[in-house]
Image (cartoon, rainbow, N blue to C red; front, side):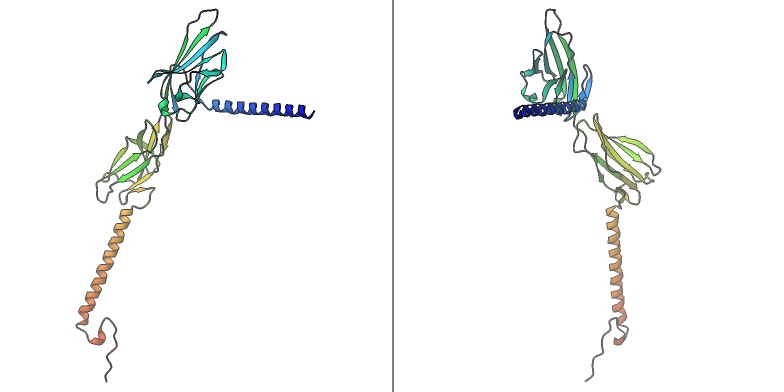
Length: 287
């Protein structure tokens, strides 16, 4: 009786694990990108791709999945008579490809997986059928990182300010600039990674930001603020150069005043009596 209960418990556990694995797999496939024949599908690096297998009838059939461009080779062959096994799996796709419920599933796609893929279906039955063929065009992109703005020059020593926008990650990235006025109006002003601002003509305190994008992602930089009195300030902070200039000027003025006082003091001492000197000193004692 105890042994029978253990067997039933084990069966229930296996059934539970099977259901859980099925649910997880179904969720993963629902989050996948469905590639459609004769169209271009843009995928994000690391994503899962699904290629539908469009077969006809109930005859036995073989499925051949392969890459056609930029290289031409077979990735695997699958037989409906032996559905649990893939045949002749290419080393580059080992552990990354399978067949599940009428789809070829390609896991963890990378940028170098970009290309043209084909599915061939050959039928084996009493009725002669032509081979079915589907073609899929896949482009895989790495998402863009947040752009960073580099500020070159300032309105103190130059008539122009140059803003340079760059990203550390991303493929096929395009960059453009937006300007936000004090009234909150946002407008696209320039395409490209480098923006030149004319200090003379730029009168209003405006904010600038750059946007990087590709077919699967986009990201926006932190804003920088233009003020003709302070030049360009990241996040609206006071320009460090202007602060340094103010400090240097204050030190110079203080030094000039100090030197002038010392010189004036020495000049006055020559025309005054010894008890009228700038520095109080005791009179020598008479013996």
